[in-house]
Length: 214
Length: 261
Image (tube, rainbow over all chains, first blue to last red; front, side):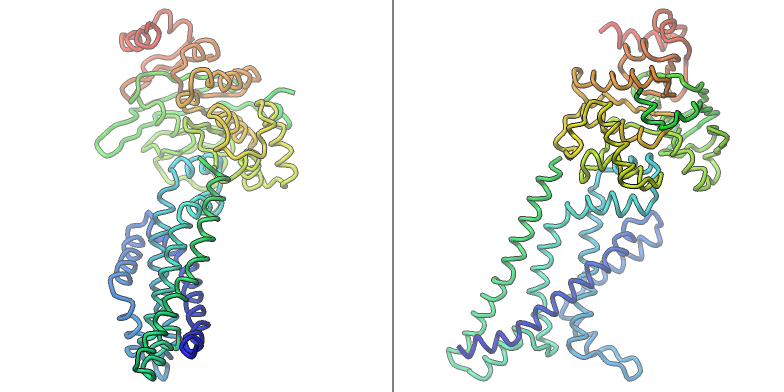
């Protein structure tokens, strides 16, 4: 069971990385989604450019750029910092696109009704559009979260001591058949972590569907 | 208590509205060509005409859901020139004065019927939740849907949703109500319950402008019948007079199509 305990050592880091990047993404994607659906063409273009740029480059490249390519004065990213910022920014871009899709799929009449009632732009956005958009996109957000959980393993390449890094370390020290064990375990662990997210999101989704069933 | 007394609280003053020289173009395509309409306080105006005539667009110009390219809108001492910049205070005043009911109801699906009616009161009029809920329940009772207060719109029939939407608009004490084909999305029988509420509202003296294909409603309830075709008002006046003896050939053709089918 040495393999398991080795892999488990990386578990807190994997969870911390995933949740930090996810939190950055969930919040940071809001203004970007607004930018993506802005009526100002410059704002829209700038937001679109940012999203396409971030999504167009593989995560591993971003992590290497952040870890080894950035030096401002004496400041350099440590591995964990680079991983959180990298995965966070990528999350912002992906989630903004998901939000935008959700906002656009709210029927146009909803905004019109809100305007006709005299609700302000802010109230219309946060009280009418966002709650409906959230219901539409919550399954996609959950899917993204499980994807991010697995993508956090890429941080092993810049020496962040998460689960895959620990598996590799163990495998290197045990170059026999035993070396394959940690990878099996880490696979099972990822599945075990994903399942509750998928389960919760399905329950949340069906509950909200029942509540609003259109 | 009548429907609009509940709506008005302390019987808000009746207001009319004057629209002058409203024009609207989408690119090269003209939708409204210099349309003027004066609506007297406490009257019901029915807008009829073939589809594509610009009826709905005209109605949506009244509360600036569509922004006309030129013209003036006068209501309650506010004069708005939509072709120029409209300041947000005038816009807010306009939207407070004018309530609107849509063909597709547009209730907020994530809120209960009660919250649909209370939420705008709290946000726009600054009423407390208790005040707003009380007013909402009164209005729901008047439109015959007291028992639906805690249901979400998805659980209500189309006719019920439309009546909730009417209550939602009335809750903000509008002086003028716009109806954009309020029964077109409903089964004929279900439409009746909506028309009944509208008749009651008209009888109470609410100023109403109604785009409709319901010819009986237009004839029996409206004070003024306005016929639109080809981006213009082609005829207006007493509904019975126009329906029995239209002056314009285009009106005659349209009425023949809708009345003699």
